[in-house]
Figure 1 (spheres, rainbow, N blue to C red):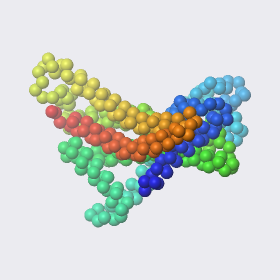
Figure 2: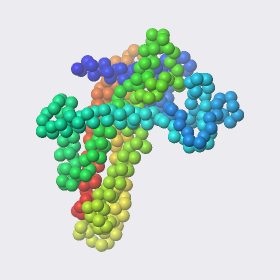
Figure 3: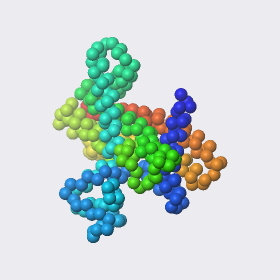
Figure 4: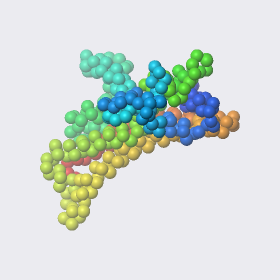
Length: 342
C-alpha cells in the first residue's frame, strides 16, 4: 500500500512537469515561476459568449494582447470575442462539474441502499457513507447547534463532501497531460502546451478550493446562515441581542457594531482565507520542489525533490480531509452561536 501511495505521488508531481518542461525546453530556459502560475491559476478553456462577435487572427480588430484568446480546432486560427457578455467555461468550473457528478454517482446509490433497511448494514460502501454522515450529524451539527441543527443537515453534509471532493480532486493529476506525456514519449503525438487536447481541458487537475472566488462564495453562504438563523430563532431581537447580556450601555454602544456587523464579516474572511491558503500552500511547495529538478538540472537535487514532494503529497491528503472538517465545524459553530443570546 505504501509503495502504491509513493508511486501515485510521483506520478502526480513529475508527469505534468515533463509536459511543460519538454515544451519550454525547445524554446527557452525553464521558468519555475511560469510553471507554478500555469498549474495554480484559472483560465478560460471553452468559449461561451452571449451577444459577442468572433474576431479571428488576421482580421481587423484582432487584439493579440487580449487576456482570453482561443484556438479554432478546425482552422487552427486564434480568435477572441468582441462585445457581448463573457461566460467562458474555466478549468475550475469543469472540475466543479466533475465533483458534482461524482457526488451524484456516489451518494444517490448509497442513499437508496441505506433506505431499503436503515437498521441493517447493507454493504461496506453504504456503511462507509453512513459513518461519515453520522459523524457530521452527531459530532458536528448537533453538538454545535445544541440540538437545533436538523434543518441544516442537508446543507452541512453537502458542504463537507463538496469541499472534500474538491480538495481531493486537486490531488489527481491532469488526465490530459498524462495522455500527452504518454503520446509524446511513444512518438504518437506532439504536445502543444498552449493547445492541449479537450480531455486535458475537461480534467485539468486544478484545485477548485484554491480559488478565492470559490472559498469566498462558500464563506458568504455561511455569513448568510448566521444572520438567517439569528432572525429565525430570536426574531427582531437578534439585532440588539447580538451583544452579550449584562453589558453596560456605554460599552454596548461600542460592541454592537463589532458584534452585529464586524464579527460576521471577520468570520467570513477567516473561512475564506483559511481554506484558500491551506489548499494552495501544499501545491506551491510540491511544484517548487519538483521544479528545482528542471531549474538546476542536477542529479543531486532529484532525491531531495522526489522524497520531499512525495511526503508533502501524503500530507496534502490529510489536509484535504482536515480543511473540509474545519470549514463545516466552524460553520456549524458560527450558526449555532447566533441562535441564542449569550
